[in-house]
Length: 158
Image 1: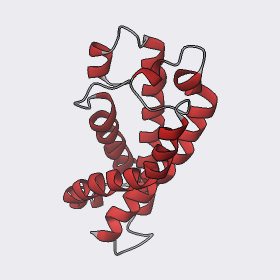
Image 2: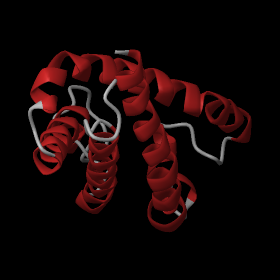
Image 3: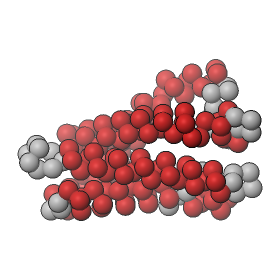
């Protein structure tokens, strides 16, 4: 269980850092600190340097905890995953991770259905869809990497 969960956590943190950094720097930065930084109304943003430095300190540990939690839940379906080939395993993980962690997450947030309903007054559809595309891409890569790492021929003791 430990190796399995650590593999998921590693995939999640790596993808979070790479995709999150790319999206932030090239696509969504304006929402945090542009001419109309809508996210700074409800999120700590780089504009708030004292709090932002604290966010940067805790960003990786929080993602690690998140990965450990999700990975330990996914472990409960390991026999099902073991019975699937790489493509089916990746599809299963992507679809569940994307829907449950992103699109259908219970708390209203930018890019999920609850957020599209409850915070639509100052968050445009463009912003929701932009963030949803980041969630989609992260979900794809987490699923692909993790599925690869738990392939039986790579390591028999997942």
